[in-house]
Image (cartoon, rainbow, N blue to C red; front, top):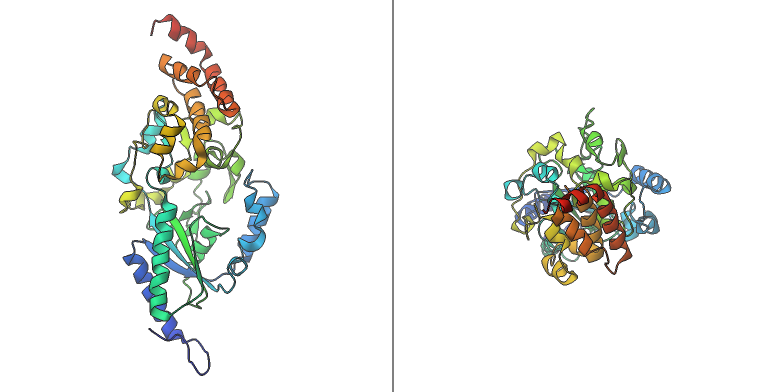
Amino acid sequence: MEALEDRRTGVRDPAALARLAADIRRWARELGFARSGIAGIELAEDERRLLEWLRAGHHGEMGWMARHGTRRSRPAELVPGTVRVISVALDYWPGPHAADPWAVLRDGRVGYVSRYALGRDYHKVVRRRLQRLAERIEAAVGPFGHRVFCDSAPVLEKPLARNAGLGWIGRHTNLVHPRAGSWFFLGELYVDLPLPVDPPGRDHCGTCRACLEACPTGAIIGPYRLDARRCISYLTIEHPGPIPEPIRPLMGNRIYGCDDCQLVCPWNRFAPVTAEGDFLPRQGLDAPRLVELFGWSETEFLARTAGSPIRRIGHERWLRNIAVALGNAPTTPEVVSALEARAGHPSALVREHAAWALARHGAGRLSAAGSGG
């Protein structure tokens, strides 16, 4: 066990801390993290931007983002004693192990699920490995103050990852790494150890506007500015109520999340294929038939999404999202029949979206019935 400070003076040994930082990066790699870095806790400029975003109402109905106050942007308020944040990245791009995303988006008969949600829920995977990293640090230096996070508390994970050298925040507001693109999960380990920090990532978006132009609903309202109220990821996952009618036709067949801004990002040509079998597609969700998904009972939904991040939206929102996609699908007797089967659903939310979808097929419905389909 290495001593990090002089017992007589209490002064931390910079050389010992530097060695520990190098060990932490090595241990992170051994635990399967693709990249890691160390950041300080100064986030004043990011706090200013966060507060402006909240004042503009761009967080939609995610009221918890406002309720947490400055604990999100001041790590030491969330975990007293924190002086550094160890940030880690875990790649999830499925590459050839999943159906081509553009082909799925072009086929209105199937549903598009964001690539991050095709496999097992990443939260537990990342947190478990971060806890093991904390245990390795403790074995090396003795007890120390720390806490593990992965979307589990008010944390400004992207600014912290940027400050730890894991990339820059792109114009679409996702983190981008120059050699890995943006298809990766983030996790954090708050620590009370004054480790040497890494240089922050530098912005390499340049004049590129691909993500702004690709957004189906115009949710990226300007470079580095996202209005969640128009974002398909927010609307299909976080939003609890009806999806605004003007946005429904723009959603196409996206039933859980949206990846368009990442799919067009030129930096993602460097994205490595994940080495994690847990993140590869399960239940055929890389190109699932909408009619089949819409027929899932709640019991079947819970069984098929066990261990998946999709499960947390619940069966009602799942049906709401698929109803919109079916409303945008090619008119066929099969599609109309599936929607009619849910027209009297106990949930008013599902009934409304099914009725909207049926109305979209009104003209085609008559011809389909007349053809003897």
